Length: 189
Length: 424
Image (cartoon, rainbow over all chains, first blue to last red; front, side, top):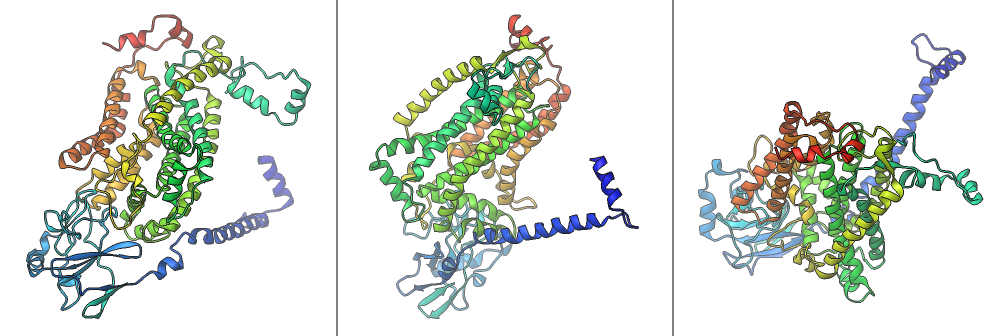
């Protein structure tokens, strides 16, 4: 190795700063190949992202007219469950009675619903812990100690505003983007 | 390392001489598993599990290639194609049960192999790289097993994929995009099953390549042995063939008997009945558990229930990955120059405690989470880290090892001092 470097020095004299022309050429050639390799790998990496058809399933319409107070339904949006619940006045009052300091992820019911539609609680049916579907939307299911939703996987309990109250989940059930297209229909997504 | 007294390869047949001077493949085999590879004469049955693990890798690859001939990697068709295989394809049920239980038995073998290494100090110099390559194989096995379990697209498959990719969402900001990148969607679906199938088919061959490195590194230094004493001369070794080919062969037959009994008479004993229900994205099974071989890690994941600086969920994920990653540092955590647990009375006690601890973790991981069980799991998880990070470094400083035998031959021919003395 040492003798090789020495013979190289003889045939390619170093410049004033100790860098040979050959050094520059080596660095330039390897960098060029390196950048090119990364660029070539990029399509192989980005192809794994959600494709256009999956992204296109981005909105779902829900008819609210059949959901009476105290009832909820489960709809599928982006292949994931969404809970649509018509809260009873008692549930709304319970949610509003909770002090913000008792919450792990402080949010009021008003912040989690649309203005004037505080009884319509629309959240993802995906536990924020590891993605199980919590119980409590179906008739007669366990709604947990806080009367909202209860995740059977690791025991996360949500209150009537679907806010996390107990268990390992870090945040409230996510409220997806949605808008009321008429008083009895919402478009999710 | 081939010892100086290793029998040289001398092909007698002209055709073999012709081949040897062009492609010395028979020479490689002769010097690796033939008479040209001297091995310590005192290996006990705990040393049988390495070759057994290699056999199970081959069983998994063979049965897996066959299964792939009938499997449809589609979210709509996967479940039905597995049922079709089970009911209509000739011997399909057998091949699938052999693959399912082969995975479990592969893990049984590998766990025994790992604990053999832990007890007899196989991770110590000069075999650190053998140990670390083994851990790489183990990590690849876990990834392969997880993706394979998703393929039948039953309820446990689907929710296992949901929960395990959910680990990544524990990381702030980058977590959710990584999860979507891994799944190719917002939840496991067509994109996920196709890529899992592709990778599940690829990874076993990557494992095979790392196995070659593992054996290569092993053969540079030669096998360890139950005394942990280095080979000194020819008396300490016997040629691999016929001695260990025969011993490995008989043990393979004995172990395959156990594998066959489970495969034929209790093929679903180690599985979960919910996986015979087709995946349903809108309903989670009441109790999600991974396959038994992940239970200890699942228990560590579940042990973090309180936020402390970082969210509990992130702690759980970090601890779970950390519990395996710390094993890479084992050669530097345990600095005792004595390799074998036979001559380390204090180490031996703590080793047994570790075995019990991992079994407790396994139980806690598989059980439905009640506060009592979670508390037991938390204690066991804490002890796991305590063992490797505190106890092991202290033990190697404080303990006085028992006297080592003069040589391997000495330990074989004279009364076994180490194993008798340990009662005291």
